[in-house]
Length: 229
Length: 197
Image 1: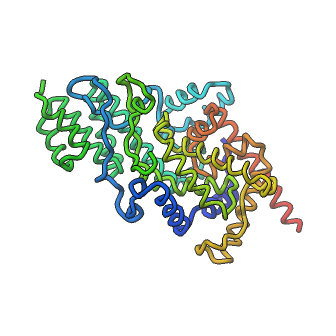
Image 2 (image 1 turned 120 degrees about the vertical axis):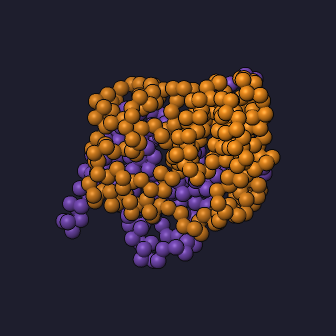
Image 3 (image 1 turned 30 degrees about the vertical axis):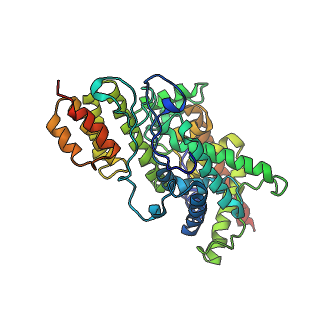
């Protein structure tokens, strides 16, 4: 993969900087949006408050896929071959170029991306000295997508009755995003997984960290109340 | 959905699918808004929305996101999906303003008297960078320009760019490689012209 010279990179960085919104831009749009969508869509204190973990997400049942896992779905359980773009590792450039440009379907392309195991980089080859330079604010945006992806996979595993697999994914989420936006949801799902595995005391301990009455707690409570089998 | 905080919505319910299949859960709108505001703003600006229209266009983009986020099929490709909303909204805006906007103006480098942020000098310098970027990007053909801009300016990953443009991943890599070479060549020509002055 051709890499860019420092001059080109400098121009791109300056341009990105020039394109970014100012705090005043953000305030104006946020205010207008709040007027249009209502304060429930954009709470007044959202720009200064911590991420709305306490609000949580409303957990919705994914269907009757096992008595102990009913309603365990937190996120979309996508098709197994699908992998999140944000966490899909970029193929090594040499491999990508060697194959390109074939008339693959986008599905095939996605599958090809999933098969690779290199760390995710935005575009450049792993050897490119420029790759780290373009990682900044958008990488933070990736975190949300990565969190969603991990919890989606965990939920899929829970729905499929693979609580052990779910637990591994949830542990991975905990390692990667100890203070992630979706920490509350992770705890709820972890409580469910532990209780589904018969590890009731651990599951209930996890449950005790959740706010009573929260959707995550309510869902996990159903599972943890069931007798271990 | 308008007027309500958007939390998790199961796709199977939204689409009327009675099967107990996978359930799509999305982050609340406010989380998406906060995470992606800068991205939406920068993308819209880069796609040529004039500064005086930025507020309206970005607001419209987020209204569309708020309204349609329940229909997203790949929550893991949220950024690509959002970019698609940006592109379509900007395109619609362009069509409605075509008579007013001069042709070939892909980056607005005009003044923004309302923004208190940069000093006049900084503003001039920033606009000069944008103008140069715009000039160089315009020397690339459209397919290359799109991939290059998404990856190098908007900072999408190549898989995200491929998803956003609905092209095979290998094609995206191939175009990016060619676009980088073309961009460097254009920059080289620009510098040679400047040296001659």
